[in-house]
Length: 471
Image 1 (tube, rainbow, N blue to C red):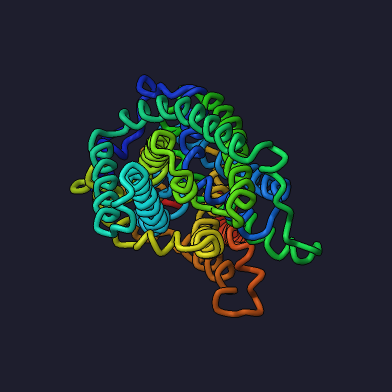
Image 2: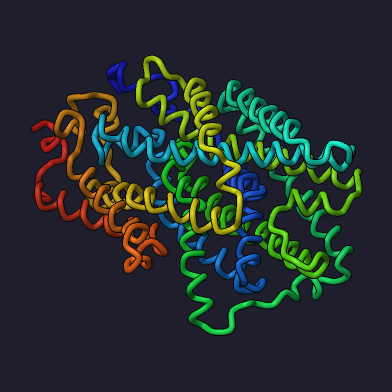
């Protein structure tokens, strides 16, 4: 690649050279097991039980949602593995070298929210662990906030050490969390008496209509849960040794890990309804109710490792690159990670986790209406417009094939606005609520179709895209 525009590049944004692409099938499988085996995944599944599903309905919803989101994830992963470029640079092809900043910031803001959520969970786990060991600390809000800020600081330390530390953390965390998840399942099985008792909580839906009214927005939430990674997966696949390593690692790791770990959340939450008379969707609260210091300590350590794993892997890598993309000469990966951390604090994560409805139907479904349109535009541009061929050099120049109109592709921005407006219309117009229930799907297809139509109308297929960019 020839010399690049320094305003569009730094060491973290440049393509990863082939000799440094060392992630294998195991690394991607471990990545997904590490990111799936954590508390927000557990709460996702347990929230379905708390909202009335039985275990079969909940597992079916989780599996279907993750098979659906796996499709755009693998499609967007291709460019990262082929060209070694990160997500915000990949965005420059459809949105323009400057317009990409808007789409990248949508993803970054959502990641900041997730970073705050994970930090709050980790801090709550430390607080609960101290309460079990020393009951006199129960209800001490100052201690809770100290634990929250302490765990947040630990995340910042890992971020400062860079991407390679993330790979090592994932490789260690995946097998550790698998063992701890199995131990928790056995522990609750002993408490409940049998697996039959654990899974005996019946569905509260007495008609197909009542079930579907919860199923469809829940399915959207399942897709929305990984809608973030479906966009920025090139941030990870840029390190892949081959296309097969990342594609097979993800195709195996994501659905298998999600079903295994959500099955744990479903079983344990169902058991809690039998043991305590109500479904307890928060595992930190549940572990504290057993009042066994040694078991609680070990369980909370598992919570901390899981939360740290996913917070760094899923919620720091992408926004760090996204913020760096705004001003590469001043904002490095590390600086972007620090910005992510502080914005995560500002988004009040304790409110997003207040209830299952606020978490699933408010947070997950809501932001899926912002990210689905971006995914639709990326997929249509890379596969249908460019046939997977990118001019990597032009991605780092303001006067190259992706300059469009002063660095912005207005067609992409119009398609994005169209997709978001349609997906979120139900928030403001009760009669269109069904659009919000399918927010990710509606936004994905509406934005993708609009983008494809505008790009093909303006530019005949026989013209070269380099020529179009130079106009």
